Image (spheres, rainbow, N blue to C red):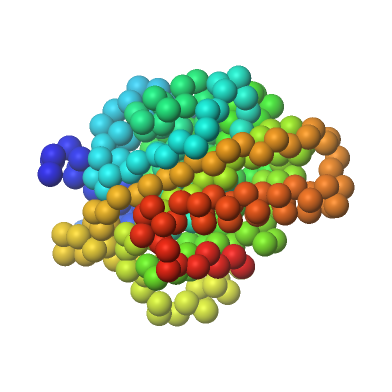
Length: 310
């Protein structure tokens, strides 16, 4: 395997799973009576974040960083392959709803960024909604901002769409993360209607996206699951326990991830959509997603996997 490909995957794993090593190092420094280094680091970082609102504007997006091996090479590791079902005009505006989340969101990471995406859908600029906690974690915050991630708040989503760009979101969010297991395809979607309302308010087309294989990359540790679910409801922070399937369980399984991009669903502009309009649009979206899954599951070995929607 190319060492740069491996290094790129390790980088993102460090950010999401191994960053506790940084805090362990800070703790060791305090123990060795070098607490002033820790205080200086924390103070500097907090002051920087306090006056930086780019997680709401997306202004730190860096085309150069997106083209770098750090962002491009993880797609070669699995590999990740986009499946195009129809053209997406570059002058359109879209909300890409990505399913499922997976223990780590490899389903959404390459969308709008990978070389293959840029070849298949030229001119379609996409910002990604990410959990607020991401932007409070050192290094992870900066890396995510560079690839075009923004805070998953309603106000931020409106700002991005008002700028004319498109958005990607994972409707199942952190709840779906906790249900990421290899033998099931579980989605949280029945009551997830925020992205539907957003599409109506801006007249954006809704595009269902399904990533076959993203649930097969890790082994989710089931301990304290119910406690973690309750904690998630109170804090909106997902405390996930998982291990990889490669390299002494430190890296995800190398298996193809096939991300099928469905046909856009045209949505009328409704500045103040009624609950009936939202429900009607949500039903159309659910039907389109289920059809997308059923039409493609046989191609990727998912014939015996029922799509469970909660």
